[in-house]
Length: 189
Length: 101
Image (cartoon, rainbow over all chains, first blue to last red):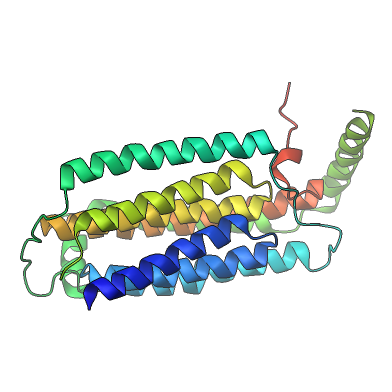
């Protein structure tokens, strides 16, 4: 039962991963990413990480992915001239795929040698990976990183607002001039 | 029959390399971003499988913090992307070459 679940979820996540990388339109990439995120959440459940699995669905699939879709909408809806980007050059692609394959082979070799096929799973305490267990750890052992994570989220929020808000008139005129200059130099090249 | 931990780790490295290929090969900034998310997720999977393997909750706590960092990273990154689009009308990473000598 567990192995069937693993095979299905793993195949789905790999297919989704290929979709993220290979899709022409960003929207299709985002939807493939959703497939990956949900099937990974299933795998997290089989690893007894139920709290993290719920977080994965709420934070990743719920918040981060919606943000991605909003930005895709914002950038691409009113700009039909933004064509899907051309694919990589043949040499570029071949080198990247070869080095990726080499990395997979290297790590797979190391993993199979160290972990082998067996490794009986250690028994864990009841409630492993549930919200109470995680919460207790967060507020005892990891209390300082937890507080710092809160500060980081606040900083990220401020940065998002500052970066995302519409520029003032004067600044936008200056950037307009700069943009024309850039376009001119690009035309000359 | 239970799944050996090495299967989870192998899946994790495959997803990581897929994400890395996306970063190397794609030029649309948004897709590069999503590939980075894919890499972060694959690392999370490795952390969780090691946490299960050793029966230690710390791995799951690390994943929690990775999630926080990923959320902040996406917010700031996408805001930068929008700002760049406003000034340059470009979403292609190859066109962002103002710092080129």
